Length: 85
Image (cartoon, rainbow, N blue to C red):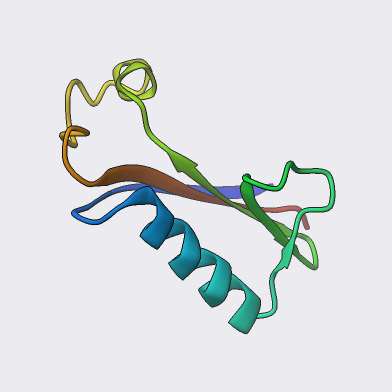
């Protein structure tokens, strides 16, 4: 298994982030994960899984990021991808 993750801060809303990644994933051949809930941002493509998770203060603390990014404005989120070969 290969795994990569990256955390981002975006000055816009969560809705804008979600809309962007839903469109970008679909254009690149990713499909929504059939096992997820409608509001989840998890996609599958061949042997890969792509997930976008919006961050909370609790998740940031667990990951050792302290209070960054500032969640009082904009959206903090992480993107992870896994490949099973």
